[in-house]
Amino acid sequence: MSGQKTVTPSAEGLAASLTAVKTRGLPPVHLWNPPFCGDIDMRIARDGTWFYEGTPIGRPGLVKLFSSILKKEGKNFFLVTPVEKVGIAVDDAPFVAVDFEVTGEGRTQVLSFTTQVGDTAVASEALPIRVMRDPDTGEPSPYVLVRTELEALIDRKSFYRLVDLGTHHDGWFGVWSSGRFFQIIPSAELP
Image 1: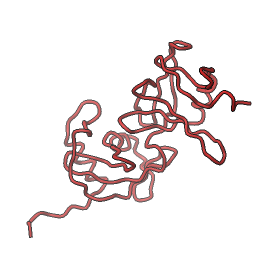
Image 2: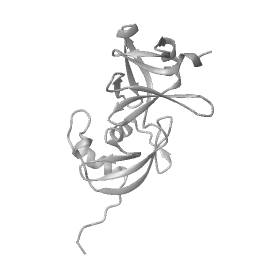
Image 3: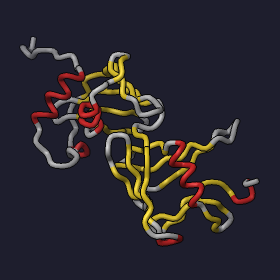
């Protein structure tokens, strides 16, 4: 026996570990590579609601805290502290872009998205917008990259606003932001 106490990962333990780490802004999860401690019963629904053991997490501050230590590796999502790494389930994207602001117009316009946890992402070369379409229905699912490998699903009302800003360019209908054109749908497929 090693004499080490076996610890079962929990949301409370993660929150306590993170609270002990003093950082300004987002923690440097890209620098942390602790051992994998197993999966916990935490899930992020497609609408951005976080669940723990099947119950919605009702404290926005706790959701924001957990979202700050979220990391994606391959297709898997983890909550990471300096001492532990636990797997969680994500139904679609871990964030939802619930609004955006527009400055400028045309090719010089800038789109700045805000997520349900208060993160901001300015659509650009580094934080692109992409639109996936359901192969059966053609329904679009628009996303914007928020952090390294972590995307936000753009909510319906914001997507409709994006479409209102749309224009045609090189055979595509899409939007400009930060000098880059983001494709939504081929122009020929519009009614």
